[in-house]
Image 1 (cartoon, rainbow over the protein chains, first blue to last red):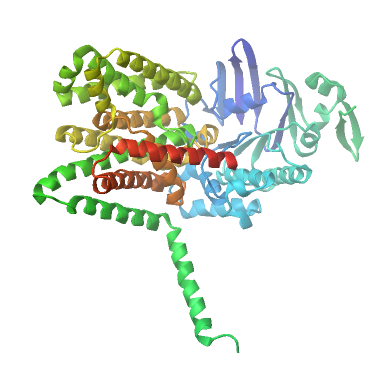
Image 2: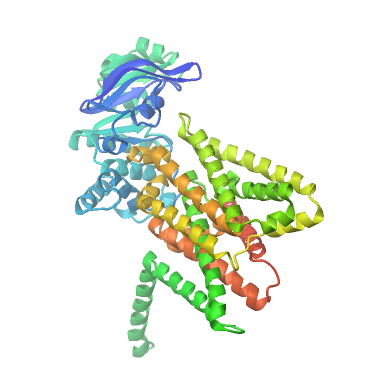
Length: 252
Length: 340
């Protein structure tokens, strides 16, 4: 499990993550929701050791994030950030190969090649193997990055807004894929989502954050309630039941 | 029939050969070997043709120049490619950190306070040592201050570098304006990069430093590939970003300080060489782009020197040629970037 104990991160005086204690990363899909500036990405940055906390302790499977070598953590935890700008001109295959870096340090073995092939196959990117990243559509690019993360073959997979800039079709595609990796490959997926309905239908657990704290935590049915969502987003949200599933209606 | 049997059988064979050639040309190893052959041809041409007197004497003088070019090409090529990978920017060179400007300032200060006579008479080794030590100390200070602490930001470091560089440049210009004409003449002569006939001891020292710094970079070649993905992705893949980047910056500053102290400011060459290397090597991997940058650097320096000596009969300095050609290439890069 990924465990945070009284973790605080401040920018100036503002605490972006405020004395947060939480455990997540159980089997299945966990969705992190909340308004902009709630501290979701900062939380990922802290777990992904991009940001150092001002106070508190973080651990992944009992390994302290502050003291465990980065190369060890990279074997159990993969993080995909929001915007992935790559200066070098890479093909899809090159990118997915990087996922093996924590295991091979750049010298690929047969096992590494198997993982790469499987990841590419899993994301249906076989036809795009030798395409350059700048020649792909947004959806294909996102799939290539997810393939890299899968090739990393970690127990935990953290995805920061994987649906950014995707149209309806690609959004659904990626969500189904995430669900599949959790169910078939046994990955423990944690993702930041803005679409609460997507979170409700694909996640086993929803954690709602606001101002650096957790304000709601539980299965979709518990979190998808008008009173809870209004408290999270400061906006009137109605929740209707459609085909037995809670659906938030937030357009006037 | 309309088709001639001879051509129908010949055409597939011909195109098969051509595709096979194209396929092998796509391989970085083949491309690098071709580049190596060009370098070898240039070295042989430079060393053995147009010898007016004793071959042994010419070889000694010219051999030293060729060695200096290899040392400088390595320093400039490796440091620029590494710097561009760390900063994820292909139109920067380490000169943005104020290296060239700092060299100009040190030389100006030396001439200003000791006079041109003392500057010319000064022990070359002592001068080189002072410049190397001061430049390395300056950059290490800058790196550890802005990157070693808690708030590590490459952008902040670049920004401070630009500001300091501008400050050094204006300060040096201000001092130069107060020099007497003779001193100024001597100084501006010293500030033109000059690769011909370097001092043997200095060349050996610079060569050693550059080789050591390059040796420090070699084990990090594969890590450099990962750094090209950007800091977040590299950290996610288990790279100890702060440690690796500090080590690389240290290697870069040693290389640049040593080679600049030997031949003068020549970092502009790095921009040209690095970008040519990216498109020529046919691979983003540093195992290929770094040697390609070094070899292309040698081609530029040695080719330029050959043209200068044999075609224009020494009618100029190599650094003028490089700055001119490099400037045009830089414009081309920027315009092409804008068009895309």
